[in-house]
Amino acid sequence: MTKRLLILEDGTTFVGEGFGGELNTTGEVVFTTSMTGYQETITDQSFNGQIIMFTYPMVGNYGINRDDYESISPTCKGVIVKEHARLASNWRANMTLDEFLKRKGIPGISGIDTRKLTRKLREVGTMKGSIIDVISELDHAFDQLKATVMPRDQVKQVSTTKPYPSPGIGRNIVVIDYGLKHSILRELSRRECNLTVLPYNTDAQTILDLHPDGVMLTNGPGDPKDVPESIATIREIQGKVPIFGICLGHQLFALANDADTFKLKYGHRGLNHPVREIATGKIDFTSQNHGYAVDMQSIDPEKLMVTHVEVNDGTIEGIRHRNYPAFSVQFHPDAAPGPHDAIHLFDEFMELIDAWKENN
Image (cartoon, rainbow, N blue to C red; front, side):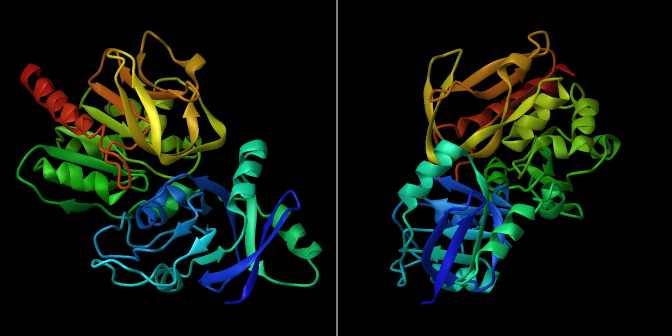
């Protein structure tokens, strides 16, 4: 294995060993506390443009299989681990993590002190970083890194460009794709929904012309304020059809109702985030992957009601519209990976749809 470097925009350098793709890469360095589910994490389009650092010390021991993709073509920029397993030991495995990353052109680096890097990101916040070859003169590499402007069209990069169906026999659901995870489609299909997946910039009239029973706003990468056309569309369709938003979809739903969002210092990425439902006091452990959150002080109580909060830092994790059949959550009730404590929210969406149809 060849020596490679991880450099950060604050001047920090880590020396490790390269695996996966052999190219140089630059992205926003973030960490996830997930102990399992690395295939789902790497293929989650919410990590578009980011270099993912796993805090769990060994990654890759059960390989890559055909069932756990959250997208077919991942768009993360790199993978950082303490130790990557060269051999995969699992009956479902089709290839090793190293082979997978090579095929997808995603560079990895192992053998660095991930605990030290995690502490730095918690203290300083997420920052730009590069995985590069070992070179004697690093000044130019740091200059390039500092000069790199991160893209703002991330949803455009990962959303489908054309509508496509996932046929079913039940409720007719339109899914707005901001970078969806396959597990969202899987949960809706399990409830026999007839699905039509649309690009992120589909206009309101096109959505309503499909006569949906409900609209799903999916997860996706980046700053929700970078997709203003989606905010306008949500404003036009709410009140006319039931809406359920997840992650980025949750943030866009909040912005459509005059709330504000802000960037978290280092985000929520992991599988054990406790979320409290305010009405019942019930706590669910949830899967999360986001760098932005809805500002509590910006909520208009005449429009929105906060339904869930993050136990660790008190940030908003769920909202519901007071006048329309619409709600959203910041976490991933579909999990994949993670606990399924909140899977019942898909059933609540079905119940909301049925109640709306009875009364309209």
